[in-house]
Amino acid sequence: MKAELSVIIPVFKMGNYLKTAVDSVLCQTLKEIKVYLVDDGSPDESAAICDQYAAADPRVVVLHRQNGGLSAARNTALELLDTPYVTFLDGDDCIAEAGAYEYILGQMKRNDADMALYGYRRFADGETPEILTGEIVPGQVLFFDKPKLIEWLCENVSASHPLIVWNKMYRSSLFQNARFEEGNLVEDSRIIPDLYRAANRFVRINHPMILYRMRPGSQSNYRSPKLCCDHALSTMGVYDFAKETGYTEYQREAAIHWAKGFFTDYYTVLFDKKKDETKEEKNYRKFIAATMRTYFARMYPELRKNAKLSKGQSFCCSLFRKIPRLATKLAKRWNAFERL
Image 1 (cartoon, rainbow, N blue to C red):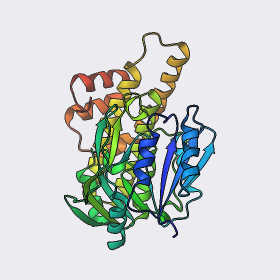
Image 2 (image 1 turned 90 degrees about the vertical axis):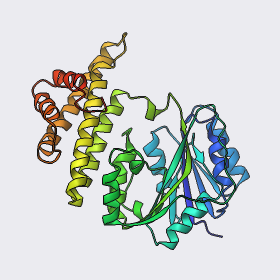
Image 3 (image 1 turned 180 degrees about the vertical axis):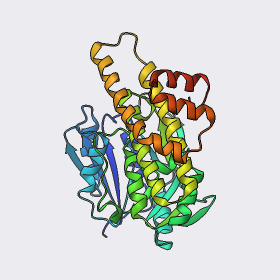
Image 4 (image 1 turned 120 degrees about the vertical axis):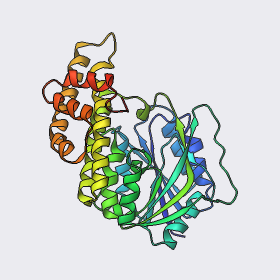
């Protein structure tokens, strides 16, 4: 029987976690699946583990490539996509329940949805995740058209889950003109607005379908200067999407959310530095800071016009244009942006 769903799993240094992730997919009650394991030039035993799965299960397709990052790995599999639906899973996470994919796909078909959004549950690295096998009983299943989606996004503008790629299932046609931005460490927030633009019908399942592993050293938990810079760029794209919707409240919330994140990230770039920083690292931080200031220059008129800033926030933003270092220190001292 032809596969209905592709599951794309990028793999890089996942030797300690990969089996848990892949087993949680292969044990799904939905059997008509294709699993892409994209070995992104991993130097550990991950590549061999991928090959072992491909030899044991014809549903598994292994793609070996030179290291190019998470986005490039996902894009490699997207070029081969030939199923009507697709989803993503990171190599250190897993599916929470054996019936998850069958349930999600059933809800998408029942509502003729282009995208399904669902919850996830965190667990600490070192814990053994339990894959449930009983009947799924979600708290709530909601159908959204595009206007209702925009309202929901406005209500959740400060949350991370609307902009995560791996807690969603998609009609594959949404990726006809969409790819992950290679080299961007905040690739989810960069592509999700494009997918929201392309989709018209949505299902929201209020139930944790993904188990998200909290790893201290993972990319999402280490705020490098590059990550901070990419975060400012990607959330600027989210603001652009909010502006396109014409929904004033969403645009206002997205603008203030960008400013909160920006001052947090810029503070990290300026002041969270190593004691034994090399000259090369110092110059790189300066380059990142300069790049971020160009982002701020672009967003400043939008903040003044749409964000309804408080007096303290407005002062910090105005001062940033002339003395960014002082403005960032004051924003933290005054708690002008509560994420600082």
